[in-house]
Length: 538
Image (cartoon, rainbow, N blue to C red):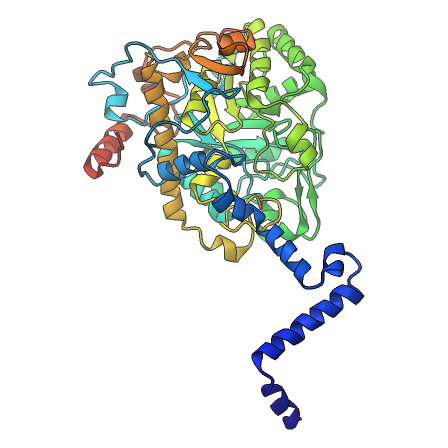
């Protein structure tokens, strides 16, 4: 035996390389039954598959130009990264965008912008931008809620995202006075780090389900009573990435912790139904909303991707007839999102946000219901210009998911669906998660939200207004193409936004229902801090 090992040790390294290549070649030609390329071109064919596997990275960093990538190009990602780090997020030498392409946004600035008085809340804090409406005010819920931030974290479950990612976002939302939608996976310990929470009820009823998988009002009440950070309840009818299709959490991703939070067994795939079992039809939806609102005292809303409009018309008619209904509606664009979805759904099912929202808003405007509802926009609206467009169309709040992920280190690797996210954001792999520094990423979330609000306010002031809720469909133009060049949103979508009642930013600051633990003392403390450390970038 020793002579054999001595013989092996005398074989030079290059001979070992040749032997390995010979073995691979023999396997490719005589034993490979699946891959034509490696059979016909043994050894060399493997280079093709290797290059294909790293193709997205090569295109992202070497081949694609600054404005070419989807869903977020390099300039958009760069703005989010710089804003999250509170670094210089400007660009020089003018825009490199094709400003004549279809759907390009032009914001119509005023001749004289809005001048911020010395004692104005934004003179003291340039980040202060709450929602102009109060959730649950019209329906007289026992615990109305005014979001303290115009931008918040959209629904992303623990399971879809890692524990460290969820905790980073929640701590960042606390610092930014934003709310955090927990997603349909239930309320995890990582959602309870100080931020306001919107609790989402999906078709699987995770966290509020009984032993048979049905919705349990008793568990809903107990959850709300035990967690005062829950400020509102959202019933998810569908989501932009895969409307009409339930989610799947593979058994391999279900840890003991996730099993306990969701009230599901380990070792089995968890499949969310495509539809709800707790109610039937539009009438049943309204009744379900009212039951939860009565039991918890919280505002209750719905989230949906938009396609056919018949049921939305029926919902509006019933709201007028019964004087009941949701306190807020989140319109989710069909652009897709963080959830894994079949390409046919992500690419083709449901309308993009601008078409979806305009169709829905016109229905509720026709029935004089816009003052009763807080409209939430979600679908690639996490850049200030797009946020301004959303407010001009009638949105009252913007939710972001992928943009929030980018702020904590996501590199758009598009591996959310296979548990191999290299940044540790969308994986349950402990090793990959370990690279996330929660304290650092929380600060980055905070500054992304704050710099978004600051820049959105600056756009608003340039248009001559005090708050984005005052933007109208006449204040933004879209480029349509060769013939009409550009038209206002009012001309593009055939409606004028209903004026939102607004009595000044000071009235929002003094509101008893303002969330985010935001009060005058908080404003003074933050103002002194940003002055002391010169954190505000002007």
